[in-house]
Length: 191
Image (tube, rainbow, N blue to C red; front, side):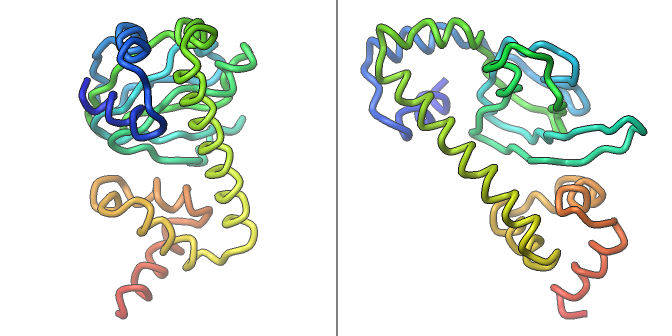
């Protein structure tokens, strides 16, 4: 739970009373490699703090082709945010790429604290703003940068992840084929 408190306190100061109320909503759980936290067509009700592990976020088209949208690593929040906010079915999947330790809470119960704990509401707003900025930057990068530059950004934003997950997941995230990724990696290594 210390990691969870450090995460929230790093966003904005949270009073001891508010923290006690928020912390009481989270329950520890494990997510084994290959298991899903969110699936498409599911109505999301929970969010989780990813203490340790790796989770990929992806879409799957009608033909079953998967497109990786994001990776989450240690000390991040996961959940079907659009589904949580809109109360509609999720269109994304979130799958563990490694064994994960998570702390899960009901989203509606967290929102229920907003009226009496403005510091919790402020933290939630800051998280939403962060995800919005991150999403916009990713969209700009995909459109305006070539694959080599996107690969360098991936390496900077996810140090060491390349050695922990299959290369085809990285290729999908970068919007290239696995063969193209191999060429980019060879060129980047100077070979």
